[in-house]
Each structure stands twice: as C-alpha cells, then as structure tokens.
Image (cartoon, rainbow, N blue to C red; front, side, top):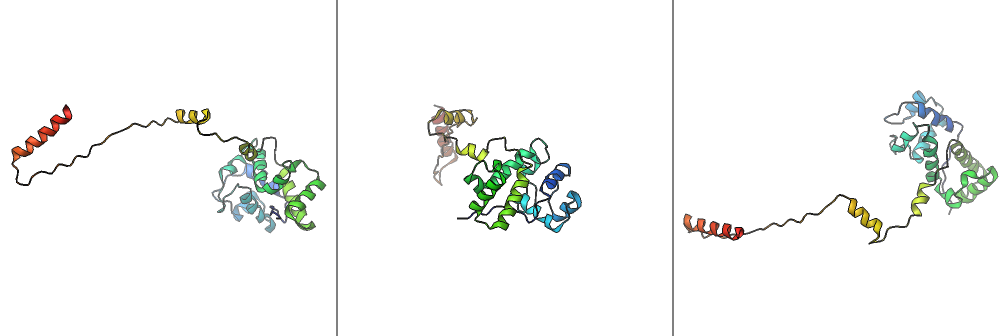
Length: 206
C-alpha cells in the first residue's frame, strides 16, 4: 500500500525557517502572524511551513511549541533534533531503507516513488522537501526508535527487573486495623458499661 510522505509546494525556505527559529524568541503559539512578523517569512506558500513543523513534532496540533522545539534553539542539538524528527515523519521511507538520507538523488527519487506510489510531479515535491530537511540534519546519532526496538525486554525474575524493584525506594509496611463492635444493653447501668470497657482494656494490654 502506498504511504503518505510529507511535502511542501515550496521548500526553498526550509533552511531559513530553522535558522530564524534559532535566533527568534520562542512564541506561545506559532501563528501565521508570528511566521510573518517575527520569522519574516511572509509568502502565502510559507504558511505551509507551520504544518511541516507540526508534522515534525516541533509544534502540537494547536501550534504550541513542544519540548522538541526547545532543541531548535540550541545550535549543537538542532541538527540532531531535526534528524530525529525526519526519521519519524518519513518512517515509511526508512522502513524501506534505513540509510535513505545517504542515497544519491536518483536512488532517493526511485525509493520515494516506490514507497509513495507517486507520479513524477509529486515525487519531486516530496524529494525536494525531504532533501531540504536532510541538508540541515545530523544523522550521526543512532536512530532511537531502532535502538529501543533492539532492546530485549526483561523477563520476570531477571536481575535487571529485581534491581529496579530494589532501588525504587518503595517499601510496603504492613498495618493491621481492628474493627470491634460492642452491643450494649439499653437498660444497663453506668457501672455495667465501665466494667465492659475495663475488661476490653485489660484484654488488649495482656
């Protein structure tokens, strides 16, 4: 089945977008007004960049910056954060070739056409958008999703599991509660009541 891959009608300002995000104040909400007035990208086609940021996970569905957005403000972490986002957004591409970002133009074009089942025009848009992102990404770190999937889950009784339980800091302290019901005669004297309570007290003290 053909997979949907992110693309922009115009991807010429992708690198410019991330460069300006790094130097601009983080917004409460990344709106078209913020894109135009603060980022300085005012073209109607540039508005699609907001949707791209959402697809990459840097903005939530309401346009609010996520925790991943904060990494874009760090020049050392931004390329790695973008690479991780690209792997997620183009997961079907990486499922077909985990080194998609290292392919030549012709190889990448063929892979996109294969995965997306797209015509020449759509393939060009997907490839242009993807390549624009790859150019500002750092794929030197291992794919965290692949790394997690290669981890062998701990079995019950494994030392790793036991260690977690030992170091969790949670200790169970047993507590016992007694619920005693006493049915007193309605016509008893005060002395009778005192004798009953004194007898109970002595039984607990013994």
